[in-house]
Amino acid sequence: MTASVTAPRLTFQLPGRWLALDPRAEDEASARIDQVVRELAGPADDAAIARRRLRAGFQRAVDAARDASAHALFLCIEVVPGLSTPASLTVHAPAGMRMSPAIGTSPDAVLGVLQESLSAIGADGAATAQRLDGPRASMLRIDRLHEDTVEEDGATAVATRLEAEYWFAVPGSKQVVLASFATPLGELRHAMLSLFDSIALAASFGPEPPAE
Image 1 (cartoon, rainbow, N blue to C red):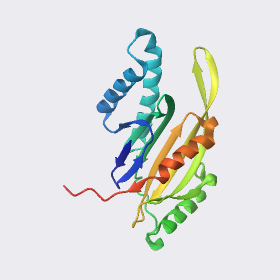
Image 2 (cartoon, rainbow, N blue to C red; image 1 turned 180 degrees about the horizontal axis):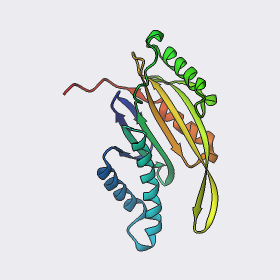
Image 3 (cartoon, rainbow, N blue to C red; image 1 turned 90 degrees about the vertical axis):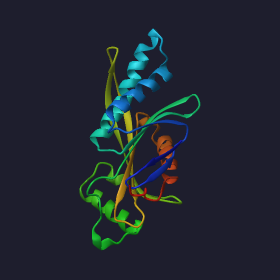
Image 4 (cartoon, one colour; image 1 turned 60 degrees about the vertical axis):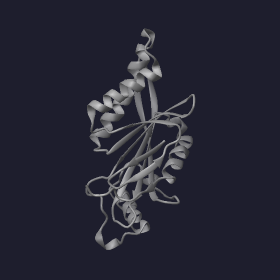
């Protein structure tokens, strides 16, 4: 799946099947979620619980993306046929995230200042910051693990959630674009980071869309 996001335009090559949603379009996103849930869980009465769980998970991702003012949300259905891989990707250009005019517009300068800033403010995950350079884009990655308490059918369990943020330097500017991945498969941190890295490193910025 090829996914393009504008402001500025960043394109990802997403492996397998992903559901693309605009979190700002609530009714449309809800209808698309219902459609995919019926496809994945089936319409049978005995699949009602599975449909409810799937829908709740997708809806939480949509709500979180909307709260973060994301421009786009992609929900992973499967990376390869038959292998369900719960993961999400949200993309947005944070307002006000432009580096100091004195630093220039090279990726080294922009990402260097960004890393210093994240460390200075004690951003969660700043200690994991790692510079990555793909053939068409440069970025700074930070990741973090969260432990979530999950209650279901009277039982309580602790699940580990992985979040990985990729801060892309927009070519020729002082602006950055944030691509944030999340998955409940935190116990597979290295494997999931490898997947997310491969997607981020293949991303590219395209030309700005023509003015209307």
